[in-house]
Image (spheres, rainbow, N blue to C red):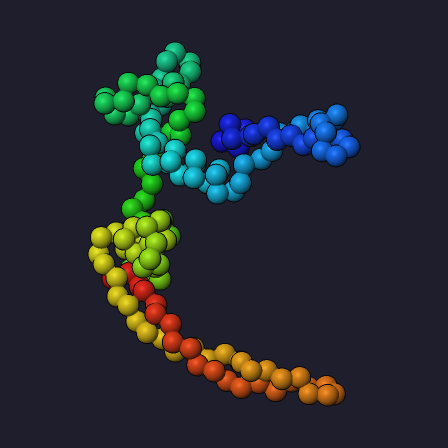
Length: 155
């Protein structure tokens, strides 16, 4: 994935912006670009099974609806667990009770993370130090302020 996303980047060197010398290099993609590409591959992954062919094994699509796959496709032998529901055998605790982002449409959003079960909004008060003052010499005094936050958790 990273190799496919490499880009050529160049910079010119010279007097007053002239391009008398041009230096180019291959630049890495951002972590987000690589992650997005992997995630799209994960969503469109092809399930395969190993089939004996003489002394070797070949990987063939497990579904008759898929006739073939390319070397750039992500393939898997076993399905990913359903992360929506607890699977203690696999160490998955599910998403019930997890904090989600009500304003996001991404994987951290309540719509995706809560698997269609909805979410509950709680208002929580937190305390933190504020209005701190430095006194000569050598200590700091602060007040304690309260802030209200909305916390969204999956049902």
